[in-house]
Image (cartoon, rainbow, N blue to C red; front, side, top):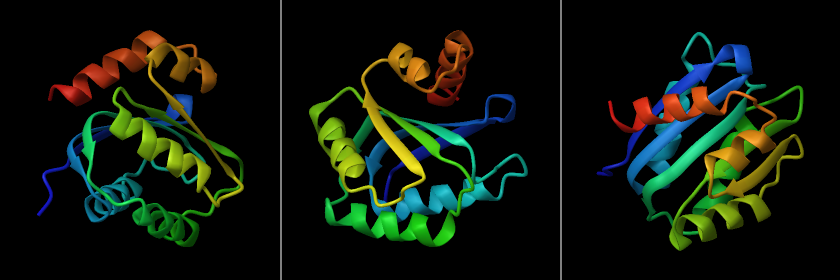
Length: 142
């Protein structure tokens, strides 16, 4: 049993899903979380993502990246290129996220890894840095 704790908020007006995770990140727990988000009435396959991994320890083996790619290719058909910004602050998170970026097989998904919210929002072309900081604060401290 995993102790991954995950929360999200969909900002429909910004075409953005913000995810915040803490605990040990493993493939099954993350896939279950992703499936849950797709049942939200505000969810769209064409949204961009900001995934905050700053409070996780990645316990998933790198082989799980290929399994997750297969899962997303099978379940997430997008009509336009989506951006996925991953926010990290440790070598463990950075290495895993960089491998995730390198092994990405979806042509309509662009992935970048960042260490600051400011650079993340800039890359996402989102001028609402303060709103995103507020949402991250709420998601990290329910």
